[in-house]
Length: 160
Length: 175
Image (cartoon, rainbow over all chains, first blue to last red; front, side, top):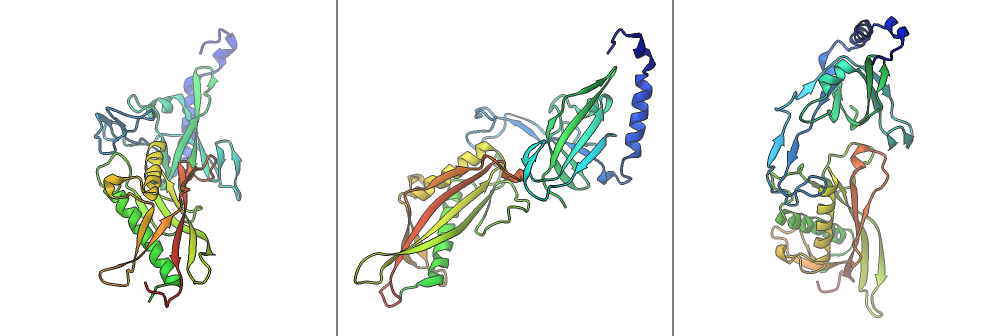
């Protein structure tokens, strides 16, 4: 974003992205399966759905279906991961009243664009080292002149 | 000889489980190719702190008591509180299945042969299990849904509470 302020010229967005992406790559685990992998669930559309998009008759076949075969079944991009361990007792967390481990994933706009899919929108879950985390929500984007930073807050479905 | 005590309760428990499973099967809940995850029906409590697969339906019993039925005989009403917990994949599946269970228990599904709130107790010790009695499901079949939860699999957690009454007296009574 052009602020119209001459001081902005001191900020080089390309160099910033390159440096941050380098740091993110530096933090990637060496084994592919241990990295954050974004995934999409299938999205089915039914002829006569309820208000939540589900069929009244469970034997109905979807009239259209967007499956993982239509989009990248899974995607790994450089990102930063902050892990928050499960609390010892139940309590309120940033995600609500949960008692499960959580991760915060930080992406630059360039990676966010790769993760954002035209058909299924944003992924609904990530796999990290075999554990599934449901993405609860995406936080408010943070700007740094021409660069936008996105954060996804995800909660563990299970922990191995 | 009348079957009483713990064996009677176990047979009643298994008969109840089988009756619910039979009814849900007749409704197609266990069929493949449906627009929901498979239904997993088990008859023992689960550890809520361990991950529970979505669409797991759990039958389990809690408190029980005995009420003397009549003076001059040993006939008693043996009551037990049961729960059907359902960890649904979404609200639509949860509402649908748990209220099917309610109607099954209340005997309001003539299309699948559930026309009363009684169910038969079978003696599964026999190769061809005979019916040894009928148990009664109390008229209050209560549906509850968790509005707060601690674990992801409890997000669409439905519970159906009901009471089963079985009547028996003494081993010496005629079955």
